[in-house]
Image (cartoon, rainbow, N blue to C red; front, side, top):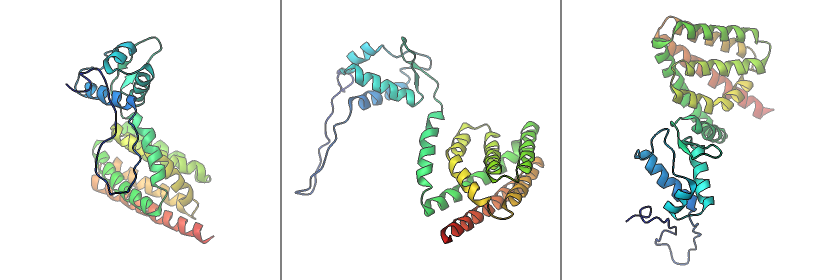
Length: 259
């Protein structure tokens, strides 16, 4: 009989060997964490289906042998994960899983990740691969409506050449439009997760002489390749654009350190 079947959750430290005289601090696992693990297992195994209500708080307390605070904390955790919805006066209900709860966590992680020079280099290299392949695939699938939307974005960028801040935001938005055009939420999650880093990057590089005009010309080259439905040209133009961005960012950082 496992812990759940026995109607009680137990916690404790994991035994193991250690060097003589070495002291270790062992944290007692929180009860609500164990409840979350069991409920996740039930959801993954299909015991609870989308739209189905979970048992009442009172029933869950009896099932797991824990108090109301542990049950409420576990339900709050599942809600933050996007797996259940909670309404006042009603039982928690299983909802359709989405990737949106990942966004906040990924954005915070990316902000920390991009603090070091080496990590920024790795992130830029990944972005080059990601967006080059995205452009290649998009050249095969892009629609007339999506091209019209990108063209409007280019017109707005042209009108914003006198404002670094406005152009930077439109620049980031242009790349987000590309991610959205493939209608894959995972692509949007990644694009959103690096949006703050991209904006900071663009605000620095676009201050370099001639860089806003260069970025606009590179965006137009990407657009033209997409409009011609040319995967090779789309990939090449995107890679060339991002190489220019990377070089400009390195130059901007070097100039900032020398002042």
